[in-house]
Image (tube, rainbow, N blue to C red):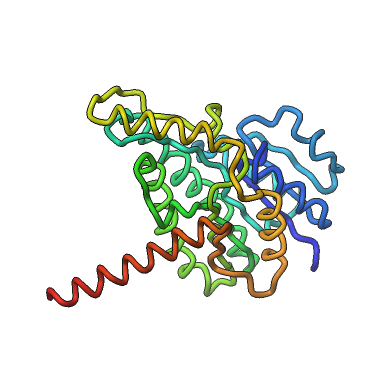
Length: 272
């Protein structure tokens, strides 16, 4: 079987939309889910035989199960799950209210878990499948202003690293994708949130960070269309990568983190 069935969350815009578009162009079938699906089928302009659009709030476990059932009814199987839905909660930790911290984890971590719980039983029955997790280089590296966002991505990667080992013996593979800063609307105020507690000790740093985000929005160097094409190619490979860093910035930051960890491990050994 060469034709694959994709189940993509957060397909309404950004990388998720591009993945749905490219998978359809490759001749595959796509279940495109998004919290808002108005006009999505028209924009993807594919036949009902190859495209199913389903509204899905990933924080709703029942809705994830219903979306899975609709996918199976339409196409009979799911070959590739892309956990792409996410949100950026930015700002200094103490400026972010507890409910916003929890919301970050509900979407980025528990939302992905909800969808995986719904889809994995089908992949286990098939004894085949690929789980693609859209993380970030900030799942490896954290910076000021990104502590809460990185915490959710660190947790996402920790879960997926362990889960990947659990499902591998059943024929289900895993790919963690770690982009650098991409030219999507991810940093747009409609998507990204900032802390709203004013703390004088952080005021200058927060102001500088907000300026950086505003200037970076729409001017990021990494091309999401190139990443979408790369993921679709990896999904077609008999041996897809287990981890995919994308962008010169991602490689630079990850390499620096590895060097830092190696130095700290060596220093720890000298003290033991």
